[in-house]
Image (tube, rainbow, N blue to C red; front, side, top):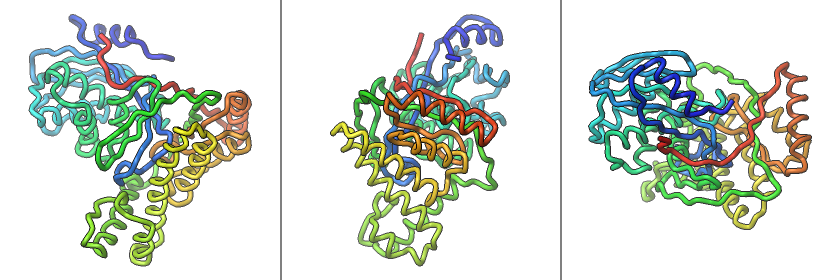
Length: 388
């Protein structure tokens, strides 16, 4: 069901009373290609979607935030001066953004807020980044005279994940949520911060997500483990080449990896192999889009899935199954999207194949796993903004 402003306004008054505040929105995102490359200094190719987070916010003249999560039916109050902050992660995102904006010199005060989202849970569309971006944008507008630039707002969300949630994420999700532009994908250079908009209106093709509705809970922190593998390879390569400035795998070559593979071991070598390949694939997709060659785009998507599954090992049986169904149905491109271990595949599908692919994927997945996956048609929308 599509989230509306009226839904949020009604709940805001019901749970927080008084007059209405201002309403802000930030989107979730898809990523066409360039997975697990952002924290490796590489390229990503995201776009904002029409689903996202909406929040109503009203300054209350105190040092306290009164917050209501509409989706979770949960309420909490916490001081912006308390360094510990709330326990629940959905409120810690808000608290973290507030603290990071204060650190930038924004004179944040307390506020009342209610928020809700229609980003499908577990779909890898970055509902957390949408929430962080929504509040960073709103606080900049309400308390900061919009003096903080957009890229810094994205970094506020990233720092919130690092310091208050414990996820050592890259910048892509927050960047896409803040910078999104209707009808455009973006190529972001995660090393330099430079980005470029690419018009996205593929005639004869659709982008569709198939949400497996699966999320595997794994022992430890598999996301951080993979980041550590990449950093270990970089450390060994940098030690061999002190004459070069080597900070991430972006700065490394295939020859560099060959030099250190025996030192770092098979697992870390496989992780780095995937990242170096993905760096090349993103640039190949950019060239293909400029040439209108969607078959090439699709070929790169399949290669990315293979790398994420076999080398980076962040796929799972259900996602590999959906990828195979896509191949069998003649889908142009298909791959796992997001951090992994569940969630969605993103699929580039020719219009004439779309109905059969969607029905086949749903039927075969239900037959094998006993549940029907959710189909999410992708519409590329705008980034963070004030609604009213």
